[in-house]
Amino acid sequence: MGYHRAGFEVVGVDINPQPRYPFEFHQADAMTFPLDGFDVIHASPPCQAYCALKTMKNKREHPELVGEMRVRLMEHGRPWVMENVFGAPLLDPIMLCGSHFHLKASNGYELRRHRYFETFPPIFVLQPLCRHGKKTIGIYGAKGRDIAQEKRHYAKPKESRGNPEGVVLPKKYAFEAMGIDWMNMDELSEAIPPAYTEWIGKQLMEVLHD
Image (cartoon, rainbow, N blue to C red):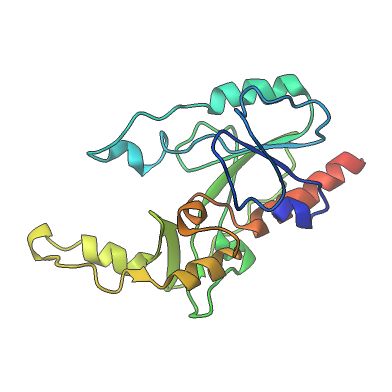
């Protein structure tokens, strides 16, 4: 959606069906889908192998595709963006957060969502400052969560924690903070706020017009 707002015609590709995707969509393997005719490619390889899920007791094996995707994008030869989480092997990425764009819900909770972006050619000049207030919402595990309250809860001894009261916030605040209303909560947990890609997309437009 952010690239659309920046002026791009958007085509989505995913190996799984995406019935709520708001633009032209192809269910296919992004590692083999033809790239001819596209001016810019945005890739979001699976992040599970790089995030906290890799340390959980019930962890599963997940593909590590950042390196392979970078080779494919470089061979294509057009400008590209690759997004992932902290810990992914991106090269000189920039980190974006909801606080950069003043994203918040109507209850005053600011969006804390750090995502990292590698681009070719490099298009970023300055790293925006990350400035959170005390009330921040995180969206993961198909829930919107009060991050500070969750940290306080899990800092208690396990035998005295009880139920995590006040951690999970009403879903509407998650959608408001992300600026998204066309997904379900599972999809929202893996999404990028459109404000991020609109900001990137405007800079890519300048690259294409040079």
